[in-house]
Amino acid sequence: MAEGGEKGAEKGFRVQDRRRFVPETGESREGKPQEVAAQATGTQEPGGDETGGKEEAAGEDLPEISFSTFVIGLSTQALMHLGEIPNPLSGKVESALSVAKQMIDIIGILREKTRGNLDQGEKKLIDDVLYDLRMRYVEAVKRK
Image (cartoon, rainbow, N blue to C red):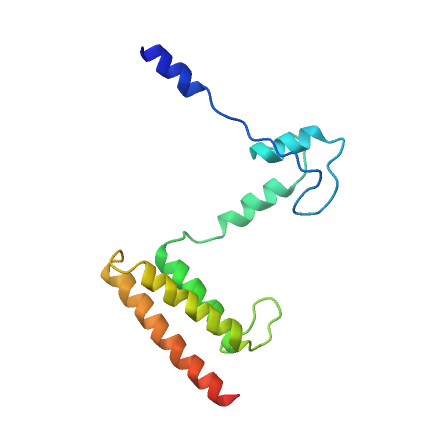
């Protein structure tokens, strides 16, 4: 019986992307079945395009994601939209209060949905971040 279980474990399913275009670029895929199969399986043919190598190199610079880093990332975006820190792409301080409010609300929803599942440090972090962002938002609205 163990052999039957092993045979079943070997069987699986294969996902094949049959779209006629590359989602990232919008280019046509017609006549390129090997590229389609490589993209669908997440593998890359030798001598294929160079995007796989670029993605790996970019991934090495990224910090490990945890709940705390996720919350801090969201709060950084909110601060940027509040006009507290410059936009890293343009280098300019820009304000979009409606987007900032939405980011603050997202953090609030995250706090509600994770209630009872956070350790003390995570709970304190999200509470402190929400308080700080809400106060900054009120000040930003008064300035406008």
